[in-house]
Amino acid sequence: MDLLLENIAGLAWGAFFRLVAVLYAAIVLHTLVTALLSWIFRVNIEEISIGALLPVFKMKIGTTILSLKAMPISGFVRYTEPEAAQATPIIQRDQSRYFKQLPAVLTIIIAIAGSLALLQTAIILIGKSAVLSGFAVWGQFIAGALGPFSVAQTYLADLSSFIQSAPLETLIAVVFAKYGAINLLPLGGVNGGAIFSVFLRSLIALFVPLGSLFSDRAVNLYLQLSMILLLLLFLSWSVALFYFLF
Image 1 (cartoon, rainbow, N blue to C red):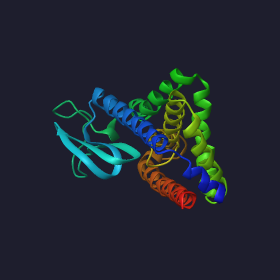
Image 2: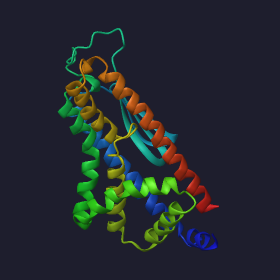
Image 3: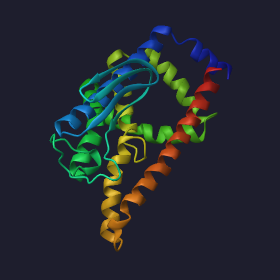
């Protein structure tokens, strides 16, 4: 534990803020690319949020709210959805449409676009090895969450050393690749959940008699349960980070 404290104590403030800036840049790129594709396909957007928790700035662009928040944890695009009692034609009078009414291929394109932009940027910076580095985060994320006082501590110590020693372009590439990859986990709350739900809905409709009658309920249940799992994994990492710092 003393060694871990020495590692974090040796982390220069400049390096810390460099990591925060790079992570925030990854969130900005991921979120804005997702919003851009949504606008191109004329999907109703209620809010674009960059960052989390502490509001810093908010403005309205047409009918869309743009929010900037202080914590570089996540970002999201929230879509306007029809009221339950409303008939839901795919195209509305203003030629816009609801996200849940999109064809499967457009849902996948929008959901994957932000992560692909991050991975492509990482590849440009350090080559194809960025992809392997990025998707390694799946195993690291799960293993660290299952061992917050052991495995996670090793990962955090390695991260501390990496931030201090890595060239800026390498830091950008690794953070972009890992943030892009973790958003492709097939869980509710990240883009991978939306992609997986398309395939899950299709499988239910294909193999289950009258599957289309309850595919939405099954998919929604999966997304809700998997979102709880994702939150538990993040909570475990929060405990690990607190233990590492203090």
